[in-house]
Length: 403
Ligand SMILES: Cc1cc2nc3c(=O)[nH]c(=O)nc-3n(C[C@H](O)[C@H](O)[C@H](O)COP(=O)(O)OP(=O)(O)OC[C@H]3O[C@@H](n4cnc5c(N)ncnc54)[C@H](O)[C@@H]3O)c2cc1C
Image (tube, rainbow, N blue to C red; front, side):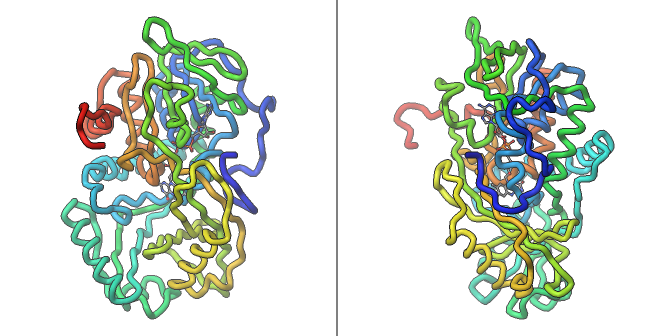
């Protein structure tokens, strides 16, 4: 099971089954075959199709079924910045910058909006201990060139009057915008098809075909597909090892549970994304407040748990009393594709095989730069300098070196 969902999660409501005639037919060959129609696979595929290549995306379920429709859609380069993430910051900042043209093109070519909201993000402290930790976070953000402005408790509440008076301080991150994942996925699907791409859903890739050391295509449950290049964008499943056992990609699933609450005039609402130490709360254009997300090392166990949902509600109520009045619209889980250093793995792994995996909790933020880097590599044979540190080779260890 990819995820567990009760009620509304997001994404197009229709449920496409394997073999459904609305799914594309598997072609015999393609310039590029992409494994996985998540946000990353479709973003890369759209760019390549726009570049004039014949691109087929193979998805065993429906587009977005993996992590991509479970996400909140924050583009949070500053709010999510942590000790140890310095190396990732240039990639995050570049992608945040690329989101503007990416959004404009995506909306123009799909005819759909992605609910791009630019109110910014507040990271708040409740109580004195949290203020100290927030100051540490602010120092880190400034040291690494991320924009964040210190606010007093009253200044935070002037921006978000629904928050409790116990809010003692906050950081305002003006560049940390957000999108609606369901709308982004619908738009990518439309734009990719409009660019001539083939999306084949309900079709599982079972093996890679290789000739003389080069990856030359795929075996799937609908038959073989020859391809000049294969892109592995199978999210948390990229590390399973069944497709490329000799690579042992350091990617694992990190489960997240989230919920959607319906904001009403009685409950009050938020306009910014708000982070506390326990949860984030992201108001969407359709009146939903997404409260997320747990972080759990439970392998591919998708089940929703009482403890997980309790932690979300308790964390939200601690900052925003109005959540008590909100209707629960949906609860769900998903698997972040998490690499051993929490950064994505981009670039060629074998002749004919390119990786676009391991985006952890930053897939939405990093989608534009990933699409740019992977399409530049395949179309022009060039590595974007900002993406160069994120190849698989960084995990290689010399014998005797501690793991
Ligand atoms: C609760 C939660 C909240 C999040 N919030 C945010 C956020 O606010 N901002 C942000 O930037 N990121 C967020 N993320 C992270 C983000 O969702 C991911 O980084 C991103 O969606 C990864 O996209 P992907 O395309 O790599 O993977 P996925 O969306 O998982 O797509 C991989 C696809 O590959 C398919 N597949 C796998 N194996 C095969 C096979 N053999 N054959 C065919 N198809 C296959 C799967 O079915 C799946 O659809 C969140 C994640 C979670 C779980």
